[in-house]
Image (cartoon, rainbow, N blue to C red; front, side, top):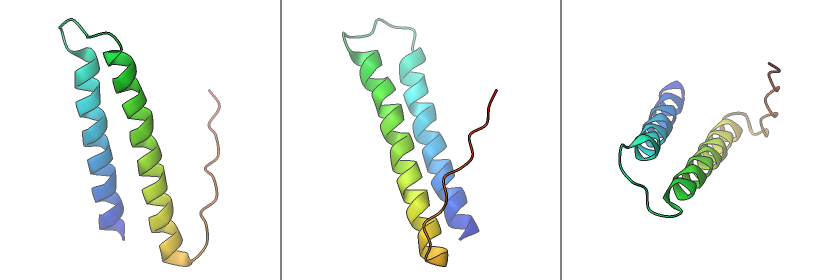
Amino acid sequence: MHGEILNLLDRHLSELQALRRELSGHRAAAPGERRRVAAATASAAERYAQTLSTMLTNVDGQQPSAPERVSR
């Protein structure tokens, strides 16, 4: 399972990096384009969290607990 989680994380980070490149491109953005890309990052995070949660649930049959929030 360790390898599956690392693969999932690598795919997620690659997707986020591609979206970041879209946001930081040195070109004029079409109306609503930055908002679309920003929303895509949130969707990517939701998909990652759901997939990881499913993977962890399948390991021990229990729903993983929510991570503790880190205060800054």
